[in-house]
Image 1 (tube, protein in one colour):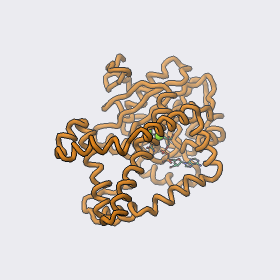
Image 2 (cartoon, protein in one colour):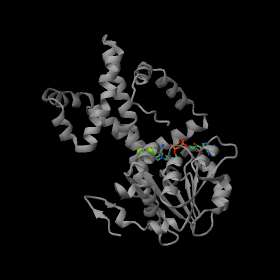
Image 3 (cartoon, helix red, strand yellow):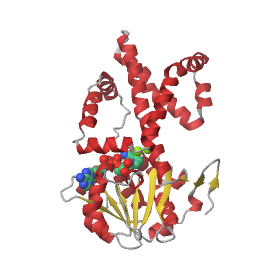
Image 4 (spheres, helix red, strand yellow):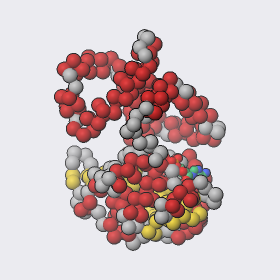
Length: 340
Ligand code: NAD
Ligand code: MG
Ligand code: MG
């Protein structure tokens, strides 16, 4: 169980995991959304005894059963299981935990998460005699499933917040193995590290930063009179090709593949767009994550009926980049819809 020591972290691969640890447990997956369907199906295909816990009347119930999964109520699933993985939305987890999970936790059980939000910020407090672990895929749920079926896997962060049984780490590692994470690497981290870096990444770079960058490029071109379709292909569609080159072979290979003109432009224009002000903003974003004020703002908006979230969602759904994109993607003969 040594793993490979790289710079600052230890990364674990298949030979470091003990699959028998998770194969010997009864696992409940609570929720069947983006992560829930991927965890349930990957674990089942890895030979783990899985049941999915859902609300009675949930529309996911027949869908999960059709895939060959055992489905029951959240209470029943939690009662039967040795390990309970919480995969309902973060903001609903405290209530679901209080109403359906807490009373079924037995000494030595394992409570598991795919993101550290509720444990790290103290919205869920688990009893001392249960393990609290995390298996957090570093990718969207549909990719966690797709890559597993293709024989690869999304890397995971594995973390232990409470070790009641003395083998919580083996359980976390084995769970990540069953998810397919050991095929590309399981990184040992803490709940604080996962929660803070995950929120920072999605806000500043992956989702917040990326969407604003693409939108700003699209708007600059269209406001200057260029056709929306051209702006879409340039600033949005081509993004994936550039990212694929970086993902597969590094920034140097992406730079090798693009023209010298493009590479020179990258060095000249990049720091004008992502400048000192952007870096200062990133520091503010990180600070608000670390001191819990982002978490509180999000929880308050949830209690307010998701007012801000829904307003912003409405705005982006009606943005010309979305309407242009939908038309263009509708013409692609090869594009398989993400929902399939
Ligand atoms: P989701 O919104 O896709 O799915 C939520 C599921 O929970 C629903 O499909 C439903 O089955 C169930 N649900 C919804 N409302 C419920 C209610 N009131 N009571 C009971 N069940 C209800 O959630 P998600 O994005 O898969 O997130 C689950 C967890 O995984 C979160 O902790 C999240 O931070 C983490 N995570 C998600 C991703 C991702 O790709 N979405 C990536 C890494 C970690
Ligand atoms: Mg993430
Ligand atoms: Mg996240």
